[in-house]
Length: 435
Image 1 (tube, helix red, strand yellow):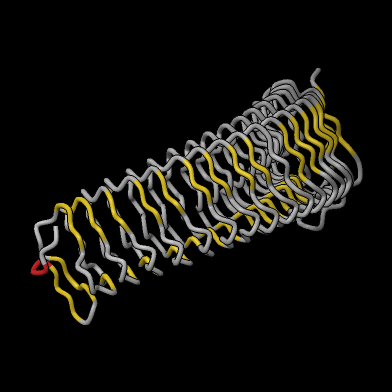
Image 2 (image 1 turned 180 degrees about the horizontal axis):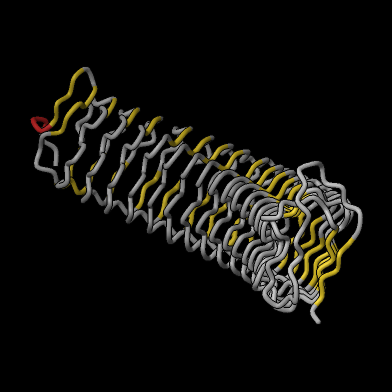
């Protein structure tokens, strides 16, 4: 319903709407809908925008919670930031072909939006454009788009499929975070980095195709993707960052390619179905908690390129029966194999100079440990819970008397080292065995 007295128009710019709402037709002659012109108009149900309008300003229809439909004419070239923010009853929208960029938050929190038509001329979808559009089920991103912004589709909880075109070079932080119904995604070949939290909490995601162009899988990229059963990490990846696959509880196997130099902190922590891990030569560091609580992990291949096994790296891997620590490893950090209940034997190479506190604590079936003469620092690597241990081979060295390497209750005697303050000079082994 059009009543010119309901509109404040200055030099072709509609600056304010003062009418009763309902079905509104904006008068002819308006060239631009100004910033916040209809903001908070909760009685507005539909709006028809005339052909002469070129721009919809920032927050123009912000919080019009009962707006169900809007007709945007072909002449519009810009839809402003947060233009339709929290229009909770808007069900569909067609973006005209003249628009080249959908700017930040344009349709954020349009929780009833089920479909959207994105024209071929769009080159960029900016930050939070469709964030929390909980009813959006599918979206086709046209070929011209090169960038998907941070949190662009975050919280689209009913989004089941998305087509990402080959031209996309960047998928932003949290772009598809909390898309809990998304089942599969193919990342195009031009993408070099899977950004922080890009697919975090995509609980239905079963498969993902990562192209060879990707160099880095960033923090929490696939965290809590609980339906993801397999993933192929391409050869070009150099780093798997913090919690990248944290609690992907259906993931069964993974191969870390030779290009990766570091497996980040908690990268695969809590992957309870992970049975085997192959780490190819090239990896130098297995980070803190990298495979902690991978409770189905039975085998792991650690290459000779690894120099450090981080704190609690394999903590709680209850089914891990054996592990070969290769020559080249210099440090086994605190709690590295803590709680590996099925681990029966471990051989520590001469390259190791440090074994951290409780490195093998809680390995209830560990029967023997051979500690090499290369050791320069060792602090209680095992304890009272190592119930099956019958042989501990340790070099007589200048450890502090307060740092007994073993406090196992089942031993007939506990080794009491000689106290010296000079550099450690390992000279021989002392065997401690049960009667």
